[in-house]
Amino acid sequence: MKRRFFLTQAAAGATVVTHAQTPAAPANTPLVITPPVVMAPRADGAEIVWGVSRHCRGWVEVKSGDETRRMGGTDFGFSTQGDKALRVRLEGLVAGTKSAYRTVTEAMGEPAGREESAWREFRTLDAAAAETRFAVWNDTHVNNATIAQLHAKTPAEVDFLLWNGDICNDWHKDETLVPTLLHPAGTDFTAQRPLAFVWGNHDLRGAFGYRLPDYVAAPDGRSYFAFRSGPVAVVCLNTGEDKADDHPSFKGRVACEPLRQEQAAWLREHVLETPELRDAPYRVVFCHIPLRWIDENEEGRTYDSFSARSRALWHDALVQWGAQVVISGHMHEHAWMDASKEFPYAQLVGGGPKPEAATFIEAHANGERLQLITRDLGGKVLHQNEFNPLAAI
Ligand SMILES: [Fe+2]
Image (tube, rainbow, N blue to C red; front, side, top):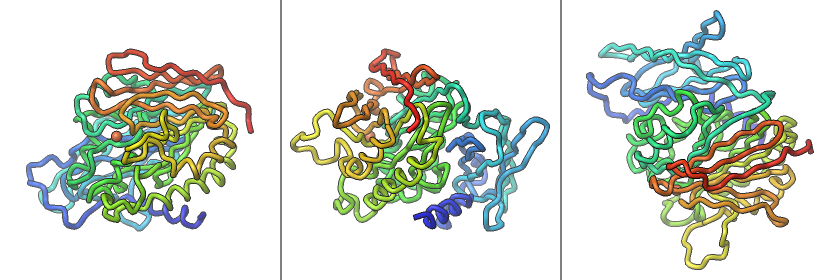
């Protein structure tokens, strides 16, 4: 297990995103086609991903105090290059501090071209902070009216934005990947809040879904990960598809069950063994498909309303950890389920893709309590939930 983690982490360090069969963009197309997206925030950095129209190289300049550092390049000795997107992992920053950064992009080959982004800022995560704020979106499904309103109404002053899966309506066309992920509804949505991306079942679908990992940054290069932001430990899990891997509609494209098993081991070996996560005052899980549902014996449903496959593997470790709430989407209707004796973790589910069904969640945690407020796009409070801090395990 450990060796596989090492190899995937090494692969994540590679910043080449390229597909040989990409047709050349017309010469008058802008070189850079999306804002820089700040993804996978960490205590010591983040990853910057931006869309390009043709084969480019690029780097990120980062200012900390009086020092400007140039970051980029791969573990294999190449400059950071790609013909769809460029990815640069920022490292060596100080927890809880703001850094200014800009991207520089240069065309490889003719016609020549060079673009520098504006200087922007982002702040690294800080486990020692007394408080944290974050926001949650889910199931946007390329509904641009919803995304534009979510972007406008979600507070900018948060430590991270968690996009809880189903950003697409299946990946039928290669060219939809970059704009859907990096430039949703034409917004500059990570200008002020870094993105943590949790995979939904639709994000695995379609002939081109297998290419999405080229553009999704994650702290360790995996679709499941954990981090600490102030008093909150956050565990992000990948519930995978909502039917069995061998369901004919998937055409042999998915292998979610081994990934669920791998995550079960990781919960035991990593989350329960890392003091910063294990002993955090608040313990929150994100996964796209809920682990519980209101009616778990509904007849006639042809897909999973809750991920029984995941729950069977993860439940005991989550209970041992002291998970207080699981935050999900998938059902396109918002819901709240209290913790119970059988399920000591509460379940919060965000709404659907249409503006009238969409929700966003604002979270604030300090030494007193963790508060989650779920609102519709009109600002109406649908759920308000509070959690007391836990003692160390
Ligand atoms: Fe969905």
